Length: 242
Image 1: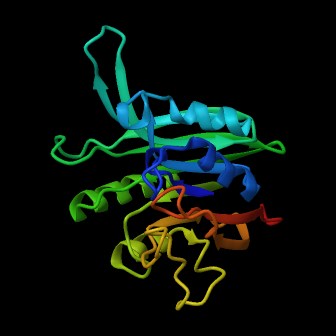
Image 2 (image 1 turned 30 degrees about the horizontal axis):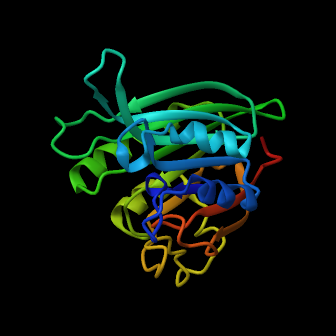
């Protein structure tokens, strides 16, 4: 699953992480990439460690990857905002890569990488949230593709890419990776995920390397007030050709 949770604030303006957690649990997903996650960031999220809170509710392991880190007034006070990966599988290793292509004139972004052990097979999972600025979006896309190309393990890439299907940015990605939605749906069915109350844009994607077979993909449309995005879920199977 990939899910931009809008720091837990729903379209009804309520902050409710149990509602987010319920979406995850009812989906049956084993690997979840979350965007717009706060870690003791501000009063908007009641200074909660949201990734830990959701992971505790779902009884999963997790890794948080900050895109923004702000030092507070206290010596140990750090406020962070970024992405997270939750999973039922053992976590072998994790690494967070902040994008620092330009000085912080726009919102900082990052790529979180986690290596999982799935039935004695290592799988790399990435989650990211790309910039709206075209130049930065392009640089971030290049960085992600380079990281995946260097990865020796089968890879899954999750996140809010802030791009349209069949755009030039999308074609750059799909020259190297499989868009799990396109693999299973007609071009007229674009799998809109935003805004959740009246979806008319696809911003959220699950890409994979060629080692995976895509069995199903779907946008979860029930309980759409939980966030301003809808979750996207794919069922994947490692190919026998490995």
